[in-house]
Picture (cartoon, rainbow, N blue to C red):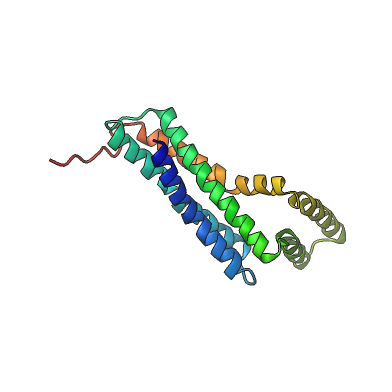
Length: 180
């Protein structure tokens, strides 16, 4: 089981980390807009986390005789999600290292400009600027930055693991195809 977890975790990790790294480095000067960029990112995460479903099903069908209990399936999916999430964190740290690490400053400037264009008052802008300054201070701490980055991806992986375990603990759901 550990081999399957490691194999599929690494596959999911590469599927999620390579696009993040390429978008973060090659498109750093002209990233997709907020909502579009988020949609692309979460779509890539979901595609990567299909590896959880495939791995649990393969383990169930090939090694468990077509039956797996919920908790072992969930644990397997969670382990794959954690490995892929660590790849995501490493890719993000590499992007920050290559781009100079001023992501929060750029994001703050963008957010302030968007709010200014939307007609925010001087008080609202000052409050947002203060919040963003606090965020910049926190984001400078590598441990905090890693935890924030993990919160972007790990919950999605855990949700996919939960759904996969719930579906695949039923042996009648996509039963193994036996060849004669």
